[in-house]
Structure formats: C-alpha cells, structure tokens
Amino acid sequence: MAKIGSKWTGSGRKAMLLGSGELGKEVAIELQRMGIEVVACDKYANAPAMHVADSCRVFNMLDPEALKKAIEEEKPDNIIPEVEAIATPVLVELEEKGQNVTPTAKAAWLTMNREGIRRLAAEELGVTTSPYRFASDFEEFKAAVEAVGIPCVVKPIMSSSGHGQSVVKSVDDIEKSWKIAQEGGRAGAGRVIVEGFVNFDYEITLLTVRSVAGTSFCEPIGHIQIDGDYRYSWQPQAMTPEAKAKAQEIARKVTDALGGYGIFGVELFVKGDEVIFSEVSPRPHDTGMVTMISQELSEFALHARALSGLPVPEIRFYGPSASRAVVVEGDSREVVMDNIEKVLEEPGVQMRIFGKPEVKGHRRMAVILATADTVEEARAKADRAYGKLNVEVL
Image (cartoon, rainbow, N blue to C red; front, side, top):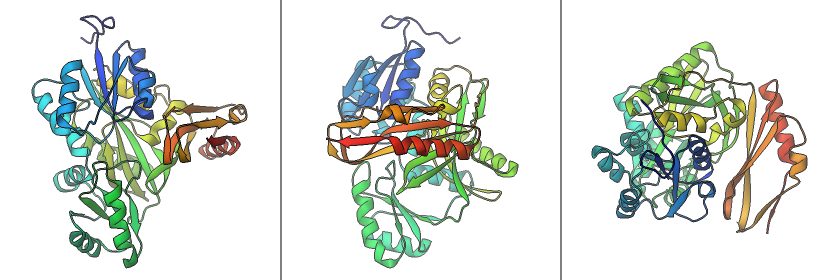
C-alpha cells in the first residue's frame, strides 16, 4: 500500500533530484503537488528546480565522494537522476544496499553514456540500430569514420542537448568533428560514438511509462533538432499503424531491460513502416515538454506518479499540440523576455520561462506551447507566438 505522510515527519517522503534544470523543475512541481519533500541538486546555484524545491545542494555530481555524502546526509526515499553527468557507480552501490533509484541504478548507469545503451539494444536485445563504432583516440576515430562511412554523426558517449555533436560530411571535417566531440562531452574529453547516417522520413520520441499498472505509451512526438539540440516538437506525429506498433515493441523491449518505474524518452528513426532505435533517456525528455499542453498528465506528472509507486491507468490525450524552444544567445546574467502580452494573445498558447541564472553562448531559456485542431495549425500558432517575443540580453 502506497502512503505519503505529512512533510518533515517520520511518515513523510523525500525525493532527491540529481539535476535541477527545466525538466527537473517540472518534476519537482509535480512531486510537491503530491506532498513529497524535494531536495534539488546541481553543479550550480539557482538552477530552475531549486526555485520550487524545499531545499537545495550545489556540488559536483561527478564527484563520487560528494555525491555519496549528500545522499547519506539527506537520506531520501527516492533518488531521481535528471542528467547524465552523475557518478553512477555510487548509485549502483547504494541501490545494492537498499536505496531506491529512479528508475533503477542500472538504467542510470547504462544510459549515462551512449556506449552502454547502444550495446544493450543492438548486441543484447537485437534491436535494429544505425551502424556504429566507438573510438577512444584520434587514430581509432579515423578508423571508425572509415568503417561507418561518410556522412556520419559523431557524439561524445556522454553528453546531452547536442553538446559535442557534429556531422562529418567530408574527410575535411574529420579533425574538426573530433575536436568538437572532445570539447562537448559532459565529463570532458573522452570516448566517442560514430554513427552511420540513417535515411529516415522522420524521428520521434515515444514517451514510455512503466508503473505498477504496467507499461503505457504517450502519443508519438515528432521533433526537429538543430545541431543535436531540440528546437520544435509536436504531438501526435502521424505514423502508419505498423510503424507505431513496431515503435511500441522496441520501446517496451528496451525499457523492460532497464526496469524500474518512471518515464523513458525513447528516440526512434522511422522510414515508412520500418523503425530504428536511436537512444533512450530514463527520465522526462526535452521534446516531451509539449505534453504540458497536450495531455491531462504531462510527462512530468506521469514520472512523479510512476516513480512514487502509483498506477497510471490511462494517459488522456487532449489533441494536436506543438512546442517551440526559446534559445537565447549571448553572455549575461540578465535576460529579459519582452512583449509577452502579444505572445499570449492567441487562445491555446502558453509559455514557460525557466529562470536560468545566466546564458553563455547559447542556452534554452523558455518554451512556447500551443494547441489547435491540427498539428500544422498548432505549429503555426507556436511560430506566430515566437515571432512576437522580444529577448533582451543585458
């Protein structure tokens, strides 16, 4: 029987977020709605989830001793990894001692780098993926590019939001792509994956929820990425019944292997009725921010519910919706969103401002959400709203 007692009492529950960005912020809000105490952790102060959490900690989560110390002092009922840059062997060790890691320490360990999850999917589960090779140094990298063929995609085995990702379009790009990957990895320079270019019609995120009630799927989310970073998403992505069934079969197979309760963002390429596995995140997905307007329970609400040991009996979809990320460029600790009254003047438009403390280079600072009678209309509405927004980097 699932119980949640009063906060700050012996019967209360405490969740510890490892990573406190905009996705973690929404998870924190949903946990707060359930009366669960939230401790938000990140490597920098004033991260978005810290704005709504009960308490916060700032430390390097890649430091095993610092991570272990924080967990032992807080004694959370749930540890919820929200980023890849975590000393996951610590989570494995603590889970073996009875600590509850969402969805599992194994899932966090395998998916924190692309090598673990790719080998699980392709070599153990027999799931179709793009051709790939791994490389630890420049000589191995050149050999991997030759083996996979040009064009190919290069990514650090541990990164997110497109950091360190590039495309090798000719032999002249090889050295540049290696340098980009070495500079963009979450844990610094290191091993990379070289993926063969996939000829696909579109790519989707299939949000997959594992709860005590079983496995459920959200409507497929279509999206556009620029340099590996999400810019647009919409729901539902039109698919043939055959492709949708194959996507769900792959997502179920991969998430069953990872285990645990929570939401998984399964990324897939689709060509006609064929489906190719790309990646999986054992946590809410950035493209899934569209669910804040498209569903009764957003991906964040589903995650909070499932990880708390509660059932997800249905996922009620409201209708065609879209999101557009607001990416700001500059170098400042003060960013002003202006003309918001015009952004929100059309019915069916919402906006979330993340409240990140600074921007250096480029950073996703907000998202615009829209709903309409069709996906095309929702995307056009989100574009119109975006076009009215003025962003000042002071």
